[in-house]
Image 1 (cartoon, one colour):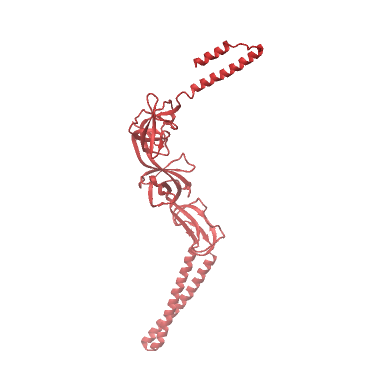
Image 2: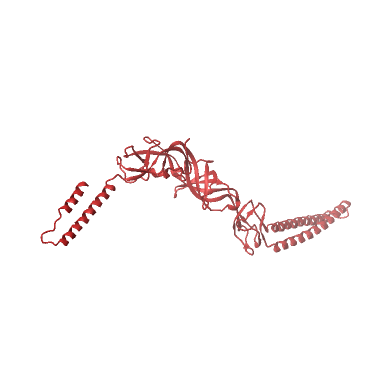
Length: 396
């Protein structure tokens, strides 16, 4: 830099007006040369302050702490028991007593069908039964009298046999009429559509005046005593999950209201197309907040690394099948250390790792890009990057 300054002084000190030039033209020429030289000086200073200096990188300190290992998945909320309530007879809907979202109890009447025709059938069946019973009683009296006459010899056996057969037919007709009345009464009772369980009405398929046939769904009831999330988990991590493990459920739109849960079941079949396994994670929620099909994020706890080396996830650099961190030495030079992840969670920015040449207190580079082993850098500490995230605690 000094030779450049001396050159400027020499140019300005030895500057003369050329032979034949006017003094004003010589001054302009000197001014232009001076501007060019000042630009060169400024460029040289900028070059020294930037390109010629070591690059500035963000670094954070390796700590010791506890990190929870969690597997993340997502899925939809469902109930273990979903009942489609259907009519057992054909008819027209007369009244509907519930709406979607209403809580219902077992055997509660949800709707009724038109009962006029059913009541008429009951009345007709009752009249037939009354007539059949009167006829049966009359035939019974005749048969009783004939048996006495046969015993006294007043009538023949063949005549008495006819009375016996007439009585048997009348008694059978009375029983048939009673059965028909029972059927008509039963069909009348089917005009009331009851709930099969306690739960929430998630779907109402009919309105008053609609016609339904036997077996046609009218309502869908979700039993909220057991609800869970059908959680889709990557097969690469599904093998770490066990039944009964603790989980956290975060419903979509309620990110600040995590709900405790646990692994209820792991389905024995995986999806070959998506390479995912379905894990049923049960949890509890008030019935009036239940929404069938609501999306949720699920975090399943599979372990914990205690008193481990903890670094920011931003410090990890994948290379091939391995992970590395860049460690800053005392002389601000870099060297690369291969590490293995012991525990991590999608809810935390911190990762528990182990490395042969990594120690608590070491400084590691955050977001390492374009670095070389042995390179000298200017470390810029970033404290916020090493703040504790969810699922991490410092070792005592």
